[in-house]
Length: 277
Length: 315
Image (cartoon, rainbow over all chains, first blue to last red; front, top):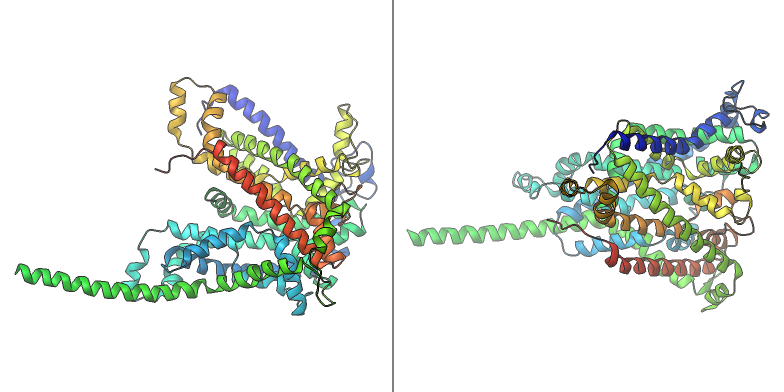
């Protein structure tokens, strides 16, 4: 959108954005400040911004009190395996929905859209009953396996992406004698690497931040993910704000760092999902 | 010669037809094969649970005992359950506060972030960062910020002469506190609005400039109507998500919904019934009622959309 960006407009915009930006950054700044405070400095009045001395030991203490590395290992297992599942299944299904003519594919697409509207609460209870009968409650299996069969939102995103590729793109390959699978594997998949990166990122982040799934299925502390570990830590040490902030930083930081590396595909994914919806 | 030619054409046409037919058949087979994982996934993780959830909602079942058919007992029980009604009221009140606030905030932020200035990218990143913070961490940060005694928010408020409320400690302020936290993580929506703003053709603004329209007129008469499909999408998503709100209030209150059940939301009570009290049938009945409420509200918004959503001509 184009505005006549006069000096006044610019000054007003900067002022509002800087004020709002400070408001949005405020929680982060206060989190860092608190994480570096001693037990005593947390409750001083008036509150201080720059702790003296800075207690970097809080981070070490937080890591040891919540067995951070065990939880990290568990979280990584769940996140990486479910991401692999999603990037194997979703592009394959989306390719079939977008580029191959077969009876029933439109119905399947409509069903896929409809499934996105089903609240998780409806399927949650029967799934728990099934996994209980399969004796899989308390393992990572229920948190990983479903992605290997496709995730509706990612199938939808990938389908949009495949649709954008030029028409009859595959025909040349077909004339050269490529099999359908070769066309998919050698030609189509390399073309949609950015889209695959996007869904990989979405799945990794949603597994990393997932709370409800692990809460339902993981009952043994050794199997906890970081989110469950942090929640348990919070319940047990609910006045140790410095340690809690240090732990929160450690859990949020990997996702934030990851975001800075792959910012573009992330933003594109959100825009695509929202716009074409 | 002409005859020959026409025969040739006829022949090649037939050949093509046969060829095409077999390719299509061949392709079709692969279409099914490629979609097979998802078809199995639908049956295993959606169709079966959906149907069995209807069945369980008419039974009494705690996973260990045998399933016993109880008819409408769960539904009748729910109607008499005061916590059920509290959780519905809480959820709807929260949605009524949260959805309009986030729609307004989202659009305003997107409009601001769309004005071409230097450092635009930095500002966009700042507003997006909070959405990356896992909800458990969000709840910890905000509980500390909003701490009634030692929290920095109430300290700042006291500096400007306002006596800060007890926030999450009071049943009146607990829901507004939650709305505040939700606004902090509004970045996803803003990005979708920004993408929508980019799709609006420059021509409209140039025409408006010729007519001497000011910023406000352009925003009201061009931007908002052309953005309305995106507003509609974000609104629907936001309604659906708020009606299912779980993780934030659960982590804040450890599932208790305190103070005074003011943070006992529908999904939390459902979770407690299923996994704390092991009342699978009761929870399934709740899940179906939620599903019906969500469908009804969504359809209602969809129907109203013909009056306020304006679609740009595709061509």
